[in-house]
Length: 287
Length: 163
Image 1 (cartoon, rainbow over the protein chains, first blue to last red):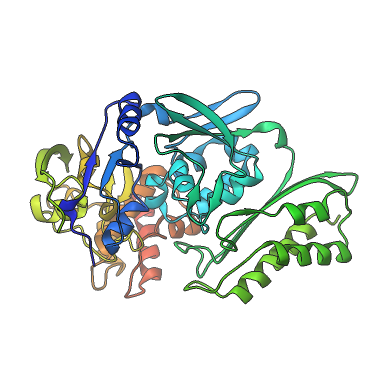
Image 2 (spheres, rainbow over the protein chains, first blue to last red):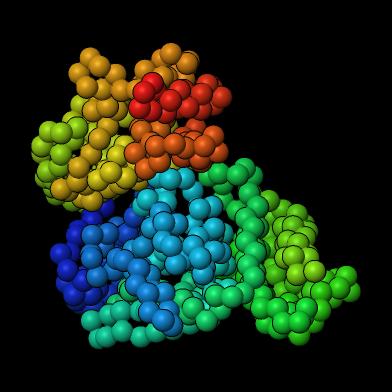
């Protein structure tokens, strides 16, 4: 049943500093509201316990994509549509563009933001695996200043992130040095569009003389958080892809992830699919 | 029941007319369009951004109006299904839906037409798969997808110069 809508407050500060001062003065009282694609769903379902929101949607300081020789930096309010349209992202970060294209529909992609996807911290979100594989860093901003933290390790548990109550996500920075890597992204859902994932797999590898010189693997919907599979990466690093290595990596992956059975899938199916996707990823490197 | 917030007044341009709307700030734009502005062409399906029945254009972008709080519509330029025809003259997309049987029960039709128009405004020559992707957020429970896609293809053809 829908929530009692008049019981909810939402206000729009005119500037970023006004927003930051407000959350510094009243920590925990105001929650940021970006494109609303997650918050409004909870409102409709009568499952939105928080009652006061600050609309940050129109703050220009949190918008736009900027490019330097070292980084591509996305403002927290960058939408999936903007990610899909960006030429440099399409060329150098195909996993992120693919994730953006696989998230919801056109209407969702026009309103859903990368910062919102990170802050909502759903283990089934589509962009975090791509961000983890890209070694993304987050800018956390507050009235006190700004700090950069690695995205890897930012996630503390189911829907728990290491952010203080007076902070907002300002931007997401992607290092460009891995632009020559091979990429693999696959989202497995009930249907091809508009489905929440059963398993989501993102991988990137740097090959050198037929060996996997370096590798990144991240998976969604198989643990309380979107997980970087560091132990599986360690098995593959420095190796030439062979059936034995793939089998060893699959076994390690099984011990690293903790899939559950829920409305979307079963633990057994998720494990099997995650292992199959890992094999598919590895097999793309067999010459 | 929690205390009610004060209503707010927002001004936006809907289908070319400046309109002033009053409601609670978290009210869904969908409800305000239907109940305050009297524009009932925008339909409610799922209410959670899955079905696209409430699709409208906001500042040129296709959005689900069930997921937009009224506060965020302040100053926006909105187009609903009521703003698609030029008085009695249907748009090419509307005409194609009529000619090619793209509408059955009609509940998804306003959203389908807005999604199709929005796609054509971004891409004048979409392929079949681009049409399917452009409409993938709009569900038709009569499952008339084939005729819907055919309607959009026909609309593209009729919009091409020399046709």
